[in-house]
Amino acid sequence: MTDPAPARLVVLISGSGSNLKALLEATADPAYGAVVVAVGADRDGIAGLEIASAAGIPTFVDSVKAYPTRDDWDAALTGHVAEHRPDLVISAGFLKLAGKQFLDAFGDRYINTHNALLPAFPGIHGPRDALAYGVKVAGATLFFVDAGVDTGPIIAQTVVPVLDDDTEDTLTERIKVAERVQLVDHVGKLVRDGWTIQDRKVRIP
Image 1 (cartoon, helix red, strand yellow):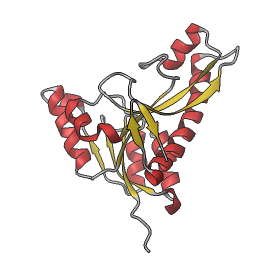
Image 2 (image 1 turned 180 degrees about the horizontal axis):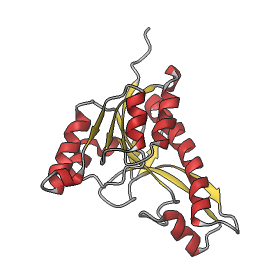
Image 3 (image 1 turned 90 degrees about the vertical axis):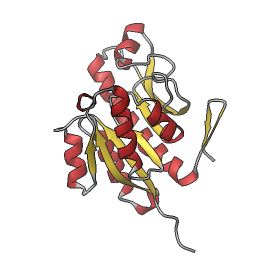
Image 4 (image 1 turned 135 degrees about the vertical axis):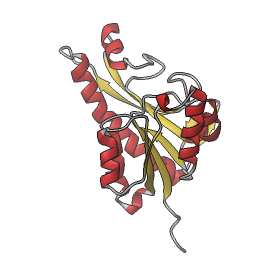
């Protein structure tokens, strides 16, 4: 009996590619069960694209300003991702909200990670908002993307204590470390074991 083919991952990025790099290191082990088949970005000239190119992975760039409308951009992004036949699409620091066409195509297999314990502190300033509120723990949430902002079904969460002397920068950096571990761990579980989503509850057998 032959081993099943590895799951196909398309990773979307907007910056340094630290989560992408962690995924590439994990997928180098055949036992992980997945391979990154393409990396997409919303801008040129970012370090994450250099990481992908150095690893021999195809890349594409869809800048919103390159298209007449946001719907045109969404259609182009959907088409470019679909070309690579992904089993899972991963937003690894991708800073653009996908539209209806993209979510119709990939919504049940498009995941994102957020640097707060959702549903608390959605949006782009999770650690700052958590500190301002005075919480004692922060963390990161991995979830399936839906049409809302950080509102999709939760796959996993990891907790990071808030220290008395934390600043936004120090808390953010500690969350990033935990977030990266959680992302790599649960992407592996998803592709190896599968998942179901029912009544907002994500279950991995």
